[in-house]
Amino acid sequence: MRTILVASVASLLFSILCTPLVVAYFRRQGFGQEIREDGPQSHMVKRGTPTMGGVVIVGSTVFGYGSAHLLAMFRGGGGPTASGLLALYLLLGLGFVGFLDDFIKIRMQRSLGLRARAKLGGQLIVGVSFAVMCLFFKNRSGLTPGSTHLSYVRDIAEIGLGAVGFVVVGYIIVAATSNAVNLTDGLDGLAAGASAMVFGAYTLIAFIQARNPCAPVAHAGCYEVRDPRDLAIVAAAAVGACFGFLWWNASPAQIFMGDTGSMALGGLMAGLAILTKTELLLVALGGLFVMEALSGIIQTGWFKFTRKRTGIGRRVFNMAPIHHHFELASWDEVTIIVRFWIVSGIAVAFGIGLFYAEFAGYG
Image (cartoon, rainbow, N blue to C red; front, side, top):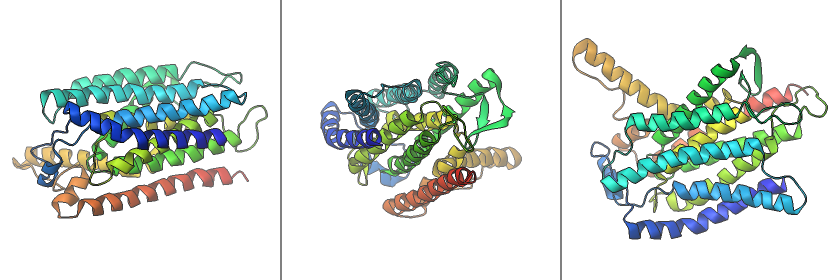
């Protein structure tokens, strides 16, 4: 428990203290955000706000994780584990893809960075390599970080995927989650606040799993998860990083996380879901991100369908993703953010309830 708290506090302090330094540096370098011309016109005042602040979130998470393990090793504990390092691999890998996207936007002074194929290619390389590595690194009990069964709150024994199927499903989860968080990052503090809630949930879930392992003696309701305590440390470090960054990212934002942050956070969420064997539960925990992604899919699908049928494309929302719909409906930005945080909190509470209800069912 102490290492989990150290990870969270260390990352929080690193994030909240270093972000203003990064803001000042990015301002000097002219690393300002470009705004979509077809977006809400109220966003034009944000043009030039420093972006790519996700480097602070990524750095703070790694710093918090490292600080916790330095304390653990000083007290005679173990070092980093395969599961923890794999989760950080996703954070860093997708953060790098997002960094390239942000850097191109800044250098080319346009709102479009990497082309869609290039971004999907980066997600493919990182996601597939992560999934493949999850099938290696057995511990003494024979557990690997990943499982070839689909999972909900634990592995579903009846649904085996096989090694190839697991890699495919793993990539889909990684790509879908990173893109969903990326879509949500459109209002000051929205993605950072909602992400902090999800990572808080995974801190609790992994901690419960660590307190109820199946090794050395299996018992009813135990969890066959490799390195759950280390995953709790990673999740706690991400909580601190998000909250520290949110101090400066809250409306009116002094810095944006950019794709560097949103893709990194989405990748880490997917990694925690896969490594804690709660893949389907992520749909509930990340309910806000699911809603944002679905709004974009519905908008695009309905527009293409109606244009094909009638020759005139029609829209379901004023604009997608859905937070822009409410902006164009004259909702105040802060009102949208707070209400969407409430939606995210409800989704996270519901997801935790599902997990705990299954756990409590074993008595």
